[in-house]
Image 1 (cartoon, rainbow, N blue to C red):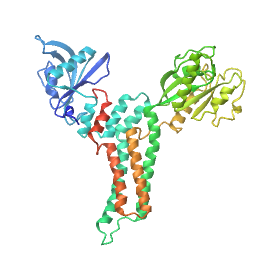
Image 2 (image 1 turned 90 degrees about the vertical axis):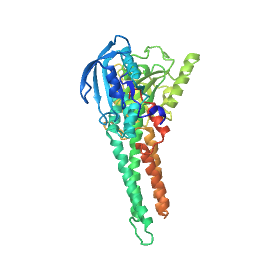
Image 3 (image 1 turned 120 degrees about the vertical axis):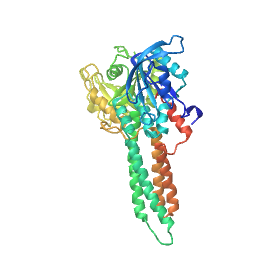
Image 4 (image 1 turned 135 degrees about the vertical axis):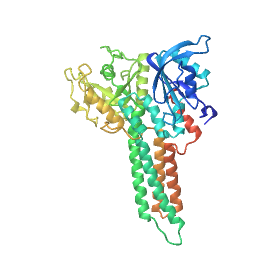
Length: 457
């Protein structure tokens, strides 16, 4: 890492979100953390490790040493702290000017302002966390749904670390036995037969495949997806949009073509962050503004992960409805306004392979089933109660690299290749797995990973 990340520096930052609050925390970490905190605190007795100490903060830069705030200071002595260094956390009143003043006083006493993610980086460098767990910290901070938080917490607890370590150990054992066969060619030592090696490589490949399958759901949960709501004018799109987001975001009237632009809202759907997009009604129009809205609706559909095709059950189906049913991308057919007298039945939708979901945005019926269908389509699985093992795109790319390397090793074994050639692929797979946990990590990758953290974490 660059010199600005010198582990001998003592660093300081506000560790709580911006804005006013009942409590704000200023975190100081490094070899001089206790001395720096002592320079701020009006107290003759030294801080005791893991004891919360009530004290006043004094601004000794002023001639009369004016009090700044009443605080609670807690010292976490190395190595038993979040970073592995000495860490002092000062819990003050959550006034932004007060917290900023505490940071400036700490900097005047010898601390440096922390870079984004530098506290967690120190935890990684000091062996308190591996890189998987460090990235999970950022995911946990950024989680907006309970399922995102559970997935991040599982990774912080080491579920993915354990899975990767198990696979790496299996690869190491297979490679070691092949290496042993190479070391004693004259004596005829055969520590593993070709069939045994093929079976073991196949088992490892299957486990990597299972991780990748879990990762497809994990990416959806971690990153979220966009869902467009399509239909002809007055089909009930805006009413459905409002019902799904739980707020009157879109204007609803009896006048066709009310929605002219894209309206978006991000909500939690069964643990998946979904951005719903309400669109203009699909029809031919001579109005240039409405025509632009229709064009934007079609563009939104092309980039969305899923579309809800809304059909009005209270009026006969039109040519625009049948055209929407032929859209090539994934979609869920929604039969709307089922609280009104029916003009047609869902059984007439021969074009739709999936069972339509019947809803009434006004009465609220069918919305639970629709949310379930949306989550199931996006995640390609029905049950989302258990969070996926893997969700990070970096991890997924490296697991895929390892899986491909193991597949090449299996091909080499089947084609009677020498042990040396098989070992090249097995070692390539091990390097990929070791990079996931950070045992083989370049400095520029660390900078990239920790740059997305917030300051103070």
